Image (cartoon, rainbow, N blue to C red; front, side, top):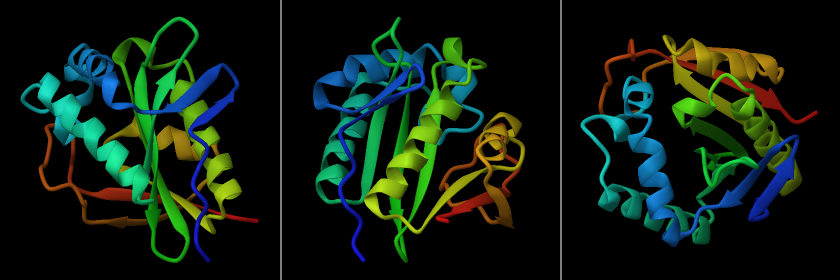
Length: 181
């Protein structure tokens, strides 16, 4: 079974997810740079700064991977801002997908990441995914709360897949799964 391509815009519950565009580089650059201290402990891309060229390269990958049907990255948009974070659906073997997310530091603690993840799960079911996975470092308790809120089941601990360790990571990934009912 082949997964369908997700919709380019997902809306609901006070959050809009829209496909990243190459002209969004200033938005990504600003959001990451204003949140470096918040993101760097968990996200290798935020360690050591984040240039406009980094944002442009990220967006070029977003476009190419979307067009190739591999990964579908979205800007997280709220009514009072352009883009306050990023989230995505990454295809995995056996018609499963993985979702991931990050937010601008000024927009944490409002349930936005949970609502964005819920929208991704709904879209994963619509496109034909058999399961959804969320993975995060064991020390990232804020990221852990999202699969717990959404009814995911803890599946396993495993070695991390990130190439570069960060200051907040303990080097153990927690894997959560939600099976299509």
